Image (cartoon, rainbow, N blue to C red):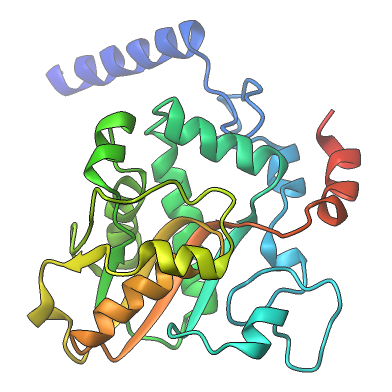
Length: 265
């Protein structure tokens, strides 16, 4: 009897909260039909968001390739060998995806992390299905940035990915020096110089002979991932792969044509 009464009380509270604070799509912020939707995304966004899988992307770093080549590699990956095996990304970092990620980080929409983790975990299961990962490791955030932001956005995603994927998450295994400057506007080589020596490892002995999955929110040039990989491999990591929520593009005009026309109004 008490259990039934408590269940009714919970349902009543949920109904009141849904009326006062109706759930919204995290990408377009339109109110969702609570009777039909169990996830925070509307049908339009679910269908039309710029998923990387809908483009021909570099098989190493996942940047979209406008001019296809027989190797399925971008210009940078054709010339320079990456020290990590591969990066996979769920989305292109354009339009609503860019706005949503910025809202997540700057407005502390921490509850977004659960759905982000689900999407990224599904990509890992699909694209890395034959790889047995030993640990999840996150791209570190500098203490100064953590204080400014109030939370570590990649940590929040990774702790749910641990549950979705059943892969042990080494919390804060990598640390970033506070003596880092904004990476905005820097190219790959400038970022490499900027990141050199700025990342340290907390649990070096656990990494030896292990296959590591690095989690990041936005993959830009890969310089930070390369620095993380360098440290991990110095500690004996066997292979290092990456999964990111979104991948930046060099010239987003090409990618915004159909995206904007379809549903960005």
